[in-house]
Amino acid sequence: MTARTFATGGPKAATGNSVNASEREDLANFISMISRDETPFLSSIGKTKATAVFHEWQTDELAAPASNAVAEGVSYATQAAAQGAEPLRTRLGNYTQINSKTVTVTGTKRAVDQAGVADEYAYQLKKRGTELRRDVEFDMVNSWNSSNGSGTRKFGGYQAWVNHASTALNVLATPGEYTAPGTTGAGTAGTFTTVTSSDLTSLQLSHVDTVMQAIYENGGKATKLMVSPANRRVFSAKAQAAGSSSSNAGDGNVRRNIDADGKLRQSVEIYMSDFGDIMVVPNYVMGISNTTVSGLADTKNFTALVYDPMWFAYASLRPMQEVDLGQLGDSIIGQIVEEGTLECRNPKGCGMIFGLSGA
Image 1 (tube, rainbow, N blue to C red):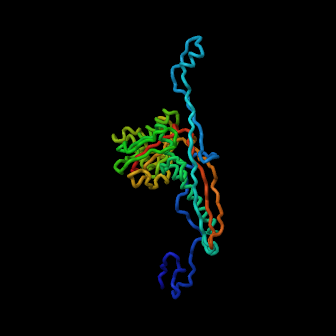
Image 2: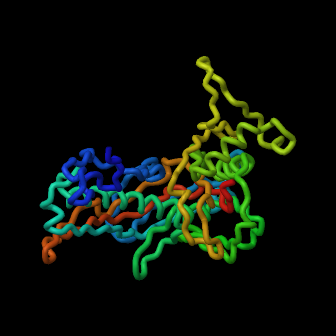
Image 3: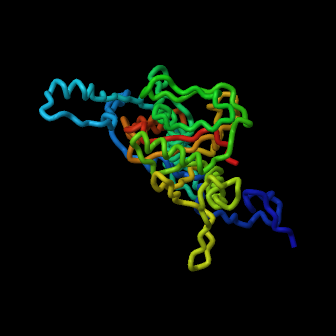
């Protein structure tokens, strides 16, 4: 009996004089997409409309609490002078960013009978559209992009706004490697000198507590902690170990939960801090390596985001659309284009922990 061992391609790939040459291939009529397609941050925030390449919004503040006792019959002029000037409104803005993917499919590729694909061009459009949404997610949470209107426009990502709220927790072993932006509300991310892997540290529950307190003191309230997959495991491990040893004595007193069915919960999904409950959300995009931070070849797991989704929105100038460019020789070509920016309605209502190792 001849052995039935085939390379990828099945019996179709057998040689013409093989006894197996007549056998049909067994190829399922579907294609499995093996990449994750979620956009956790983009999906958690709101949507709004932009009408210009520089999208702006305003914030306002209340005067700081103070003693406000006045004498009986006090005059308006005396009270107004004592009261002082009211806080000024602040105008913030972020540039829109054009995001695009192209598609090229030959006439032959569209004509041949393919397993799992009715129309190669339509399939590629859908695939590129999903990739585009993931690219926008990357620019929002993992790129450290600053708002930039010259040349190729870029919107300022999450890190460009949290830096101005005094809620960014730098846990680098050498804090001086980081320089915070000097202008409030400019949509500019901080800069780094040479950061090495030895400067990084492990995520601690105390880090989350510190940022939550800073946000609370600035008038905000965070509801989500977004971390990379590696930091998600670190957080659960620290929460489960909290209070069980002297090394974790400052991390509270969290215990595993075994439910009525005997299931052991290792995961910690909601952390009840002194300043409100916060949901822990993993984001695989934050576990992707990039070279944004100077001197650090691998910045995956570097940042944890602490925020309230109600203060963010994606402002769309041009919704995602297909542009059919027609024929190019024997190929049909097309482009997917969309344009928008990140709106941070309250920089004081979000925070960040950076300098994390993911271990």
